[in-house]
Image (cartoon, rainbow, N blue to C red; front, side):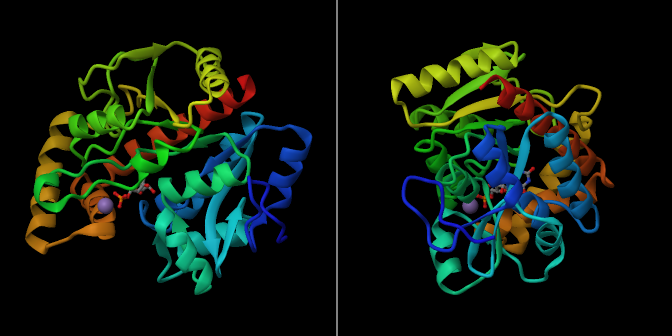
Length: 309
Ligand code: PSU
Ligand code: MN
């Protein structure tokens, strides 16, 4: 179904799935899910299973899932099974950040949306919640590459609630936390006083704010909205200690992955997928299981928060 966007101004050729449109009309909370993790962050064929599983997790939590992607030049908010299958399996599927949405529409291209593009489209469609694995951020070696994910700047001006397991540990985590502060993005530790480490339970970096339950998150979000502040509230939900990657293995494999990226001259959009893939191979799949455990937990928590909003 192709309908006008429900956001502040109608988007041309903006498709909201029947399930999402019905949920919005009847007041059922909707949780946005990104598609880059499916197309560029997880290996086939597991990625399609995960895409379907994450949507079901949202439904079981009493909310409606909206996986977001651009198909043949049309931004989709909510995908049906054939759409999810395209994201998971279509060769040459692009990685689309916010700046790529317009050229993708104009050239009728297809691609998966990152946190930046997903946040933008979710907000335009009137959604308020978004769950993902780990946010993008400041890459190590920023001094020479200036590589900071566009995710951060979009979070700074998009009033969503974003549930994640921190930022990907392949990044410079302290620098990313500093940038989140500079950009006025609220970060809440969910039952933790330290910033989670994506594959790891904790980075050891202290957080200023801690909340204990979904109602406390919702209270912060309401205050943000009443204030008229426009930045996202990031809910940092740590992977359980029982599910985390072995920290020593993590550090050793990450050092190899970073050295490999340097040696192979990997830069720009390709860097994050390269590093995540090197982690999966270097840990014989253990990082994949940790990544999935983190995403599942974030999606389930987002559905709980949805019920409180
Ligand atoms: N979280 C995951 N796996 C991923 C990503 C996040 O568990 O693959 C993706 C997100 O889409 C995020 C992107 O926006 O990686 C960041 O890429 P970059 O560093 O190029 O901005
Ligand atoms: Mn980048």
